[in-house]
Image (tube, rainbow, N blue to C red):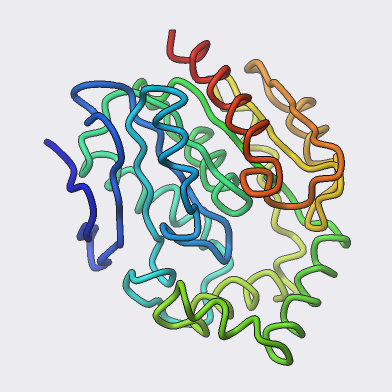
Length: 261
């Protein structure tokens, strides 16, 4: 099956905005990008195009339900929303695009979803994971930043900025923010999943990430039995692909070459 260059994919009851760049899964490995908690297909900018150029792989991006131009979700989101995405949506999505071999590349929430998927599915098609600014458990620092994000959304022009990318910015923002600020979410922890990952991992994190400390990296290094490579970027916050694009691209391209060899 050849995935559409751009448009929508129907996965169960969800209609998901998507874009495919570069060679098809039948022609080359595929890099599947999983966006952050306030991201979408469009917010990757030209990063997918540059990834294709740097690796020769096809790149697939999509907006999860509740984001971008995809279907909306009912609020509040269940606190298991990342597990639900990894276990229910992502397997069907990979099948729908004809995924044959490649990597999952996740940012923030997307990195958590990628880790949950790899830790709960022994998918022979998967050759590795790239986790940018991942979170495997909650930290006070990250929760404080999410409280600040809520204040910014409700008192500044953040909502109008997000409205450029999401057809329903409230659905996108409160779906993410409400789950993370639920008192029960403090118990959220996926470190147990890390021990079940059987493919190499590259972690790219900003040293000044406002949503997570190096304790996240240390957890992966401690819990994983698979090889874990770490790129810690000085002076970078939560978005390595935007704040240090060239360094991040090179790290991913080098890792992809090794993992896909």
